[in-house]
Length: 374
Length: 199
Ligand SMILES: [Zn+2]
Image (cartoon, rainbow over all chains, first blue to last red; front, side):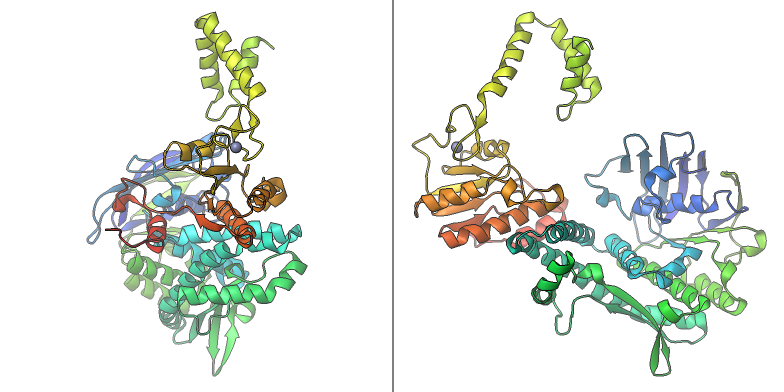
């Protein structure tokens, strides 16, 4: 899949522009605060219909405008078929989001997710490693919602039931009312847990491999640390049983604290360094460079997962990422990306000399005050 | 405020009607015959005066007992539980159900401050208890939403000890549904709820 056209209408400071993309991608060069990240944000919006920077839709509407609209035209490459036009618009007043695929509005927003396939690499990614467990759960939720049918519905159902159940606990409802939510919580929760465990089981080797290649041989691992004890619980039914048992064990404690204390909303994903027999937790003890490497490895795993599960060559969006790497690491990252990520690339950089990947082939575009010159 | 503004405001509070549609309706009424408009206004007033919940089941009714409860031909051994009174009509229109109804007036939703006490649940349990065994089956026809499911689970636990069989509406492929266009969750539920073929 490659992006061949992008139409922007009042997305942040990008105004009104119609752009045609070359097959290999582009390097977008511009000073800080000219709109480089906004540009990548607009493209990625077409995949998840959310800002990758965590901004609310209202914040994405340009100054003095009522609504924004982003339209992307995707061209099929070898394995896929057909051209697709994905459009997303948001109206500030009615707080209404409208999404269409080839001009038709899908019944649910979820049906239009992931038509565009992209991975963003950004300096903020180190938060995936250094931030709280919520950041890593969110990473898994996005990857899984886009690649596994049914995951999005399961996680949304789980969140809704959890909210209802927690209010029941907090307001001191009788056990019969709290327990009314249990079977739904267990069913959706087991489905979420199984999907997360299977994804990490499947991708942990790739993570180890990418980390080693970037760091010149250092061994690291990604491990799923679920809230539920899964020993011996291989199937979804087994996980559901473990969940039911855990709820029985914690029944008294959850009444005391007024919240559900076990379940996938308490999952953790551990990122560790193998340190000659012992392990070192990267979240707590990792150096800046180690965390950046782990974050980069996670994004590369995300791209690999898109290629394998969704059978799409993801568009690679690089948000000024190479500035912070030391030179040795940087060379290895560039080499790795040049060989692994052969699809279309859109990268941003403050200066020409920072364009260090596909630097011979990428056409240069410039951005000033939101206006792109091709 | 003029009558036109006032009526436009009232109409635009109805579901599915925005200010523009409301104004169009007002214009239409002003152009039409005065007799028609008076009849409409009388019927609306009667709705407010005459319709009340049935004393037994909570269905819409013009008398103390609704048309279902007062019909001697209905099967009194079965109660079908729905969330809202307008859902009685959906089941009645099938012409396939001959039993009685019970309207809860909502669904469990702690987030909205709705617990068992806010719903017509005691009335249901009382009906089952008082029937001293006459009610053999309670069909839980609450919606397939997260809240509807929890409401069904709660009621099942409360009703089963009282004796009747408790059943739940099946979920699955809609009639005329083409597998290709049905979402995975619905197909999974239909698979889980599959039954023996009757020959
Ligand atoms: Zn009645």
